[in-house]
Image (cartoon, rainbow, N blue to C red):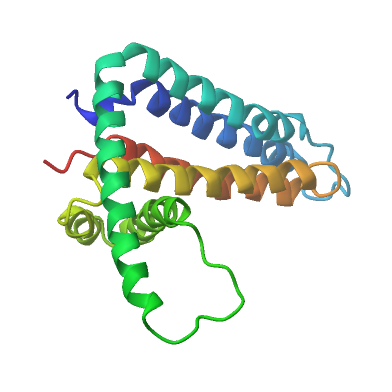
Length: 212
């Protein structure tokens, strides 16, 4: 398998470019304010870049992922095989647990997720947990990944990829808010562009993290 930073090279490059675009968009708001005379009442600023980066970000990242997939077909095939195996393991575990729960008290009228839905939720939840932990302590998060994958129901790369998805979505949500604010509150739009940067930077780290 290639190193993760090569396997996800196009995504990492796109994230890096998006970080730069966020900074540039914020600069187009803050720059004119900084250059204006202290006694100037109103300052005209440009928010088009805030809107542009919010609109183009998801498309650029999707394109980068597609390019990475096309560049590494053998690695993708192996990842998909591992994903099928771990998914089956999670489903088997969930079915065994469900069989035990059916012997217990009535669970009420609220329908529970299907086995397949639960298996997918387990992966997403692991990604969320690792992403949150990585913000606090990368070494602790790396140990958490190994702990989560020790039983064979999850694989290291798919947990890290799920964590990437988590932080990318958080960053893109901040940019979506920036787009909304751009028409009425340029300063807030600029702040939201900058608020997206730590999430995108963490995505770069997670996309290139090799734990073995």
